[in-house]
Image (cartoon, rainbow, N blue to C red; front, side):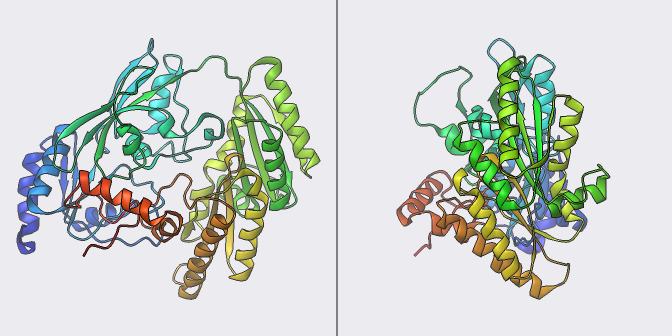
Amino acid sequence: MIEPAVLPDILSRDLGALAPGGKVLTDDPSLRKYSHDDAEWAPFEAPLAVVLASTTAEVAAVVNYAREHGIRIVPRGSGTGLSGGANAVRHCIVLSLELMTDVVEINVDERYAVAQAGVINDALREAAAAVGLWYPPDPASSGISTIGGNAATNAGGICCVKYGVTRDYVLGLTVVLADGEIVHLGRRTAKGVTGYDLTGLMVGSEGTLGIITEVIVKLLPLAGRVEQGIIGYFPSLTAAGAAVAAISSEGIIPAALELIDRTCLRAVDDWLKLGLPGDAHVLLLAKVDEPGEAGRESSDRVAAIFTASGGVNVEQAVDPEEVGRLFLARRMAYPALERLGPVLTEDVCVPRSAVPEMLSRIQASAAKHDLVIANIAHAGDGNLHPLIIAPEGDLPAKARAKAAFDEIVEDCRALGGTVTGEHGVGLLKLPGAAAELEPRVIGMHQAVKDALDPQGLLNPGKGFPHMMRH
């Protein structure tokens, strides 16, 4: 173990030699900047140093050095996480992959791409689109989040109701293990079942089992998709929830089905001046993308359900710019709300049929705890994002917000849901995960962690409730 009194000088020298193509940061502003992700209220400490690695070999060298000296490693992409998964812990190095931004290969014939972990999601999508291919996963932060971070958290997105989440597209990974060894997992073929699915295990492991430095993702043809948008304004969250449940019960699988409540709508429109109706209570945004008559029929069926469920001003749009403008409101809802004060973000997922009841319970929690709770949701797959706003410096409001947060998690589980649909457990959802996972299942997690990271140096304390050691 390096003596703490001499850590800054030693780390600057040693880490600089290990990552000559990257950067080593030890100044106070940088340590503060890289000490946490975008999760409000998740605990963090200043790291000993920040390394911005430029190659897999540099990542491996830094990990091996940290192992030799008993220093913890917290991997990081662009820091857009909402669960505290990239928050620095005591006596750690934050290891950022943000400089690793090469799209290494796009194979048109086999329909896959190879990308370094620091590639921004939208950049990968644009590179694929340039050759007629499509990478579907599209988290709301797709313009700033990295593909490595998306894989580490198994990120979802707006179109995952139909096309699935990140894990459904990851074919293979390059991973640096806790001992500094580099391994290559998965395949580049359309099929393959050799050995355990270690690729699937790493996706969603939140940097606790290894550091993802390169990702192989499958791509879909871009041709043949004709997006049509359907919007409707609803008098209440429960009415909008009923429309969501009806779409599911009729067997319609939209390409997107998103919910934005009045608080979010006002925040977005005050900021971006989109001209959204001032008297709207809830907006549902749907997309269908079948070509030709099938697409028109799906659009008509969704519009009819909106109307039957109490929706007004129901519109159908085929113009790509208009569809994009409407969905911009959804993508910008979270940053717009952040302008109003610290936001505690929930990420619960319930059965589709339970969406109306869950939205009703969220409203009840807001009233009970005297809080503003805004709602955005990937409503089509039951993934709800209640956003709890507490004024800066209002400690009683912060305490009420935490109570509401816990209550919403309990209500979610009572309705047969899960405590995180796409943001990951990180630090914020550890209590919820402890309640959701059986003790034996937590033990299985711990056994995997101990096997791959026996010193517990990779993102310690994150991802699952760790067992007490005797």
